[in-house]
Length: 184
Length: 150
Image (cartoon, rainbow over the protein chains, first blue to last red):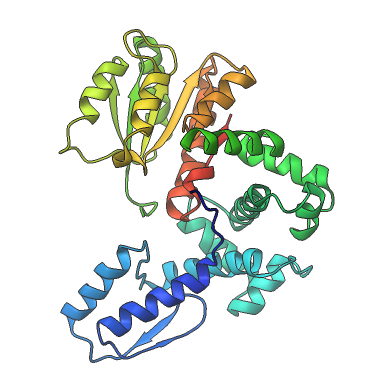
């Protein structure tokens, strides 16, 4: 029997963190957006154990402040795109500077300097990722998907989809369906 | 996960010597920190991959038309093996038929490149492929639905 599952990555991640920290008996506090506070008394060995057990779930401890800020930018974007049923109409620059308390100019500079990409590009890729998920779930029409993701029109979504993947949304759907049949 | 500072391990299999040079020159000129290994055909590539001691590549470029073992056959064999599930596969070919492109994705390729015959264009294409592939590695995007046709 083949089942299709639906999951919430952010909740799953919090549960994994909680479980691993408890398992290793590390005193901790889960903060927002990928931040954890742990007791300073944790031994190096324990810390290494924590790192190792989290890596198995592709969760990585980033400590450097700049890479932390980049991770926060990414998390804030992902949260905005995935956690809202419909994307808020506030501009992303406003959203990010409000959320992270830095000017948008500073955030874009640091992001471009330390990744191969720009914030704008990262947002586009994430929106198309969400669109892919929604297309695969097959509950919404493409027009509804474009509304949910704040595209001004379905044509604009289609052209951005084509730019990022080289495929039209319908070709994408066809490929995913055929791949599933093949793997059955 | 790899950070942008780590080098990407890249393998290329192409039976045409000129194309191999063309490709590796384009890659070198991009000045990205890459570790590039070339293979003269699909058989040599599969031999190499069958060694359990190798460090797996991040990205594989396969020419579609090769004698002995085609890129398509390599693709099928590689995707049948769970060991390689994290490896991105880019197929390149002179064909731009939609049917060929879709078929390649259905069999598990992530990237389809219509081979440009101009060096400047090839460099641009490779740069785009590297960028999108890096995004998929570094941002934990879903590999199952990673398709990019250029």
